[in-house]
Image (tube, rainbow, N blue to C red):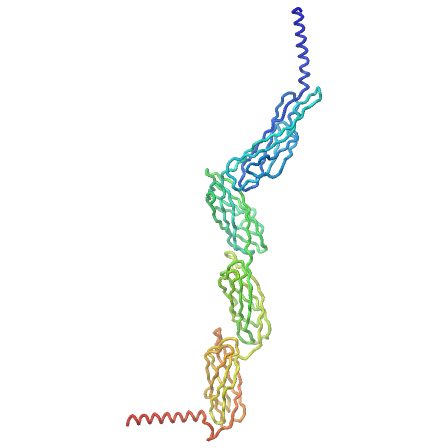
Length: 531
């Protein structure tokens, strides 16, 4: 073959190749997605549930062609495959197609253990998707693939302070105000410098005069890891608040070792108003009668839940016929379940009617540090008895005769329900009787106790032989220290006929004879000494 023919054949082959090449290239599309995962905020706090925001970016790779179909990741799903030291909630998240250059965000929730060590921790994210890696326009065929990839994401637990409010206590009841104590602990691994709190209250509770829009702020200073401090705040609790816990939101800020102010975790703590104190009155008794002073006694019991040491029992009579001069009775310290007796001296009007009367008792006690709380009124009933005699009088011995002076022996009994002292008895007699010795005295008489008192009564010679009245009254001291003059009592005295010369010796005759004998004895003694 000649050289010319060979050249022509070569040119023809090259021409065919050149003409065929564009047809082959233009009929084939190939490539694949390239997915990567990024996390913008990877810090989490111990003891919390955190939502981790993740971004998937598709930076696809093209092999041939100019189409975009082979570059798109389709039916993309994501899930946490290995949560590491965390607990993951939720399952697979469907994200749909992700085109070349597109970023798709999704979130997963993880629980961070409270005792987790600070530092970096890995979690694994599995991404499943499908894509078409080859498309032939000439043959009209395509090739589809499924891919499952796992990516490691770094989660950081920073070495910083973390706060817990372990206890909130207060003695403030609904309607009161006073102190509340909050125990705050730094449970994190880092030191908290210049720590500040911001407390947001509501739901009927006010802290340090704050409002939901203006939280209460306090500085609690520096706290080392595992160090605690007690913060005191002033709380006011609405009277309408019932039992149960009320939330307080507490935010913490601090300065790190470089003096930069940082925000720490927030805590929602619970404040429970103190349960209202309760008291009971038992064994209420009274010694009340129309026209006399008596007393009301009973037992007060602290039913809890706290010890009280500054309580006062106040009583209000619901009747104008009762008068209590000092209505406020100071109570001793009472622990829950402990009781004490009380006593109110009470006067009853002489115009009162016998029968039941109402008394209302109220206990005042300290709530918190400043507020006085009350329990009551507690209604109780007492009974006013009919008017009674203070004394009963009986004759023991009396032999009063015409023209003679005789000794009269009477017995008096204390009919009052209290002990009487310094009882002065006075006897009054009108003609034809007279009382040469009209006074008698008894030191003390207990309720129901009797004593004898002696008087001298003289009758004129012409006194009628009949029963004559004498009158007595008594002045005495009550247990309250009051001096009382009793009503006037009439008592009968019988006058008998004179005994004459042969009659019995009268008191006057005995006195005369004793005087003569005494004089005679003195005279004989003087004569004997001189002899």
